[in-house]
Image (cartoon, rainbow, N blue to C red; front, side, top):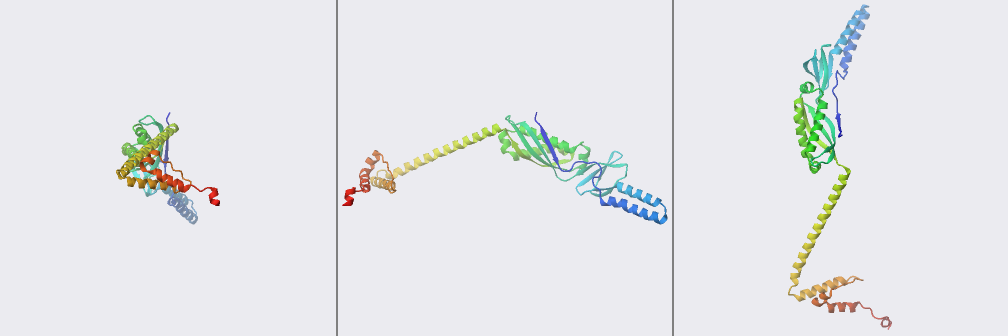
Length: 307
């Protein structure tokens, strides 16, 4: 069966305060030290005990949220509001923080494996989602686990888009698919207080046999285009010859000069062999010219050279 991999990058919801701020440590140490000093001066342990307990109580009620965080505060199980960023205080025992909401942009990677396209081709698609929480109250109260929910919504939308798209459109139309995915996922996550900033398809993997077939098809198409271009070139050359022949029509002198030039171009290189059709020899008067050229290239006999 097709499988789906969902990976979330970034921080995750966590109960309680994950940060121990120096102020919390100081709120315990300072009263405890003052209590120890007073106990030493009065020879009574009560000041040390009372001030130490007061410091512990103050540290337990003190919380610090980072700039990009908001704490969901419940008082006796009911939603009380948000706290942060910065320093704030809670009522111990009554107030609890079940979740910290991160307002930074989050990234989630998800894949759809062996999903059929519109033309029944199984593909593996890898995509990444950029999103952020714009309403912390909805993200905390409207959905149990908004991170898992948005990942499943993204995966379902990706499968729907693949099933409605042909393979060729999936390979060359990624920008359009990214926009469609962003719109579809955004419609599902907006009621949860989450906005989708962008979706990007990173990779589309098709079966190896289909890749080979597509490669052969592309090669055949390029060969067909090459032959068409060659045929068009031959037609253009033939048309140019037709146009050139009109210059020699009813002009035997020009034709004779052209024949001499052609023969000269063929014989000016040493060892060149020129094959002239007999019809061309008769019509253009090349017989006399060829004979003179042959006589010019004939070497005298050895005896005559010695004489």
